[in-house]
Image 1 (tube, rainbow, N blue to C red):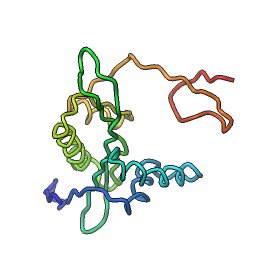
Image 2: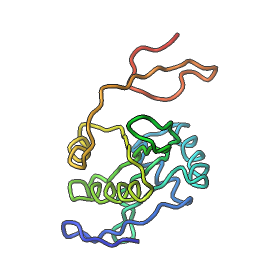
Image 3: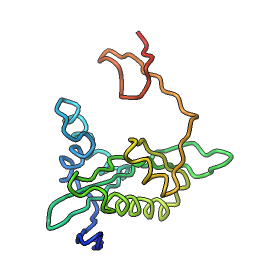
Image 4: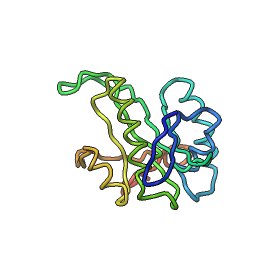
Length: 168
């Protein structure tokens, strides 16, 4: 567990564990209700055990105040990146009372250090307008080269994306 001082706030950053699945789910879907929360929480142990999801939680006075995750994605090597894994930063969340104090930056620095340790050379993430300045300050750049397609399955549309055109 890493102990740091952030703007007069004692914070410990620790590795997330299987029993943190409920907290991580709430970070991913803050304030939401619905069956998608149970689906996500049930999915988390499978990726923890498989080493596909790495996560960190920030605590202050024993209370979890934020978190971040890194999904390891098996990816094809390319001309510009021969590494077969890429990372997707997910679930970056800080409780509202603790925002703007460097907690998210510390969590991101922890995730980036682990990505470097693993030899990952490509990371991506989805962001809100609120998070964009933090990610840009860490070196992330916007990319306009991705497109989404929502495929209708017997269970309805699969996944969530910013796509506005949906297949009937």
